[in-house]
Image (tube, rainbow, N blue to C red):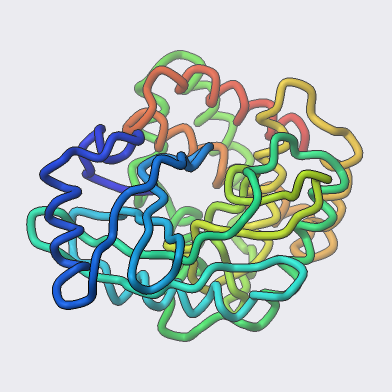
Length: 301
């Protein structure tokens, strides 16, 4: 999730001064890049552009700060799980521009964000997590440490933010803490490739609903791939009518990999993380997402 970016960048408007600065940086000595009229559905802060490097790119601004090294590591994680059946994009340019932030040009992949988290999509998405087994890069973002920090206490401020939002948020945090108190001894894997936001908007499907691509790897790192499996479970629970077969498959896979304790820890992680993110970035959706988090906990305990 991007932090500290102006709303117009995050939510799909590309202000002319920002565009001009980025295009100037890209085009210096290389030719011309311009934003196409073709939209990029289902995204926040990403635009389709033409550039000297490829016919089509995705341009994305990801941070106010210089996070080039992290994004380049994430790009290598994406490359490690790329396959002919389900593509992960190449990152051709990753730069930091003062006054704009860190941005990148990512290979444009065909397909549309998956409209539903059904059993067919979930089965195919699990192949991505399987390909990530033991493919984490030692220098990539450490999700194992992040989960351990989450277990130790409110290191990220999620509990405080969610509890202070509303009575429903307070109830969610109290329930989460009660469950996590029994889960302190979880052994979290450290060596898998982790996408970090494996949800349907980042899964691209063909017209026949076949999974053909996975995008938005700029938060990818290393850790326990059960974290990505739990993110898929959250995405299933966030639909109006969750696919029970998909939910049961994901629950089973999490228990097989991480036990009942892991099922609870990774699910509660996403319940609180997404609620906190919405408070900061999408406040109008927070009440609904707190409800989703509560429903997720109901599905796993």
